Amino acid sequence: MGRLLCETRTQGECQQMLRRWPASLVAVEVTRTDFAAWITWIADLEHTFPAALAVVLSQLDLPEADWALREAGALWIASSPRALAPVTELALRHVGQAPSLRLDVAEWAQPALPWAD
Image 1: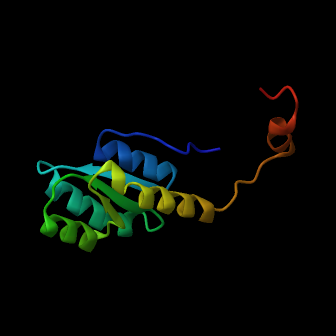
Image 2: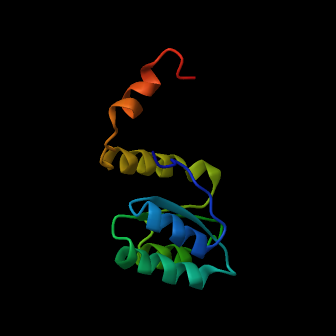
C-alpha cells in the first residue's frame, strides 16, 4: 500500500513522488523567494498530473499572491495553522475518492490475524 504522508524538500522530489502516486494531494510551502517558481509548478500540475490537487501553506499576507496562487490552480491557501482544518477535509475527501487497492488473500487477511502486530 502507498504511503499516506510523504515529505519532499524540492520540486524535483515532489515530481518523483507524483510519478509514483499521481492522484496525490500536494501541500506546498510558498515563500517570497520561491513564489514565481511555485506559481508555474502549480499551473503545470493540472497538465502533468491531472488527478493531483495542490494546496498552499504560506504566510505571504498579500491578497494578490493568494489570487495568483488560486488562479494557478491551488485549491486552498492556508496562511496560519488555524486555517488547516479545510486542508484536512480536502485531504480526507481526496483519499476517500481514491480507488481501493486490490490485495491478494494474504495481504487482505494479515491485518485481521491476532499475531499481525
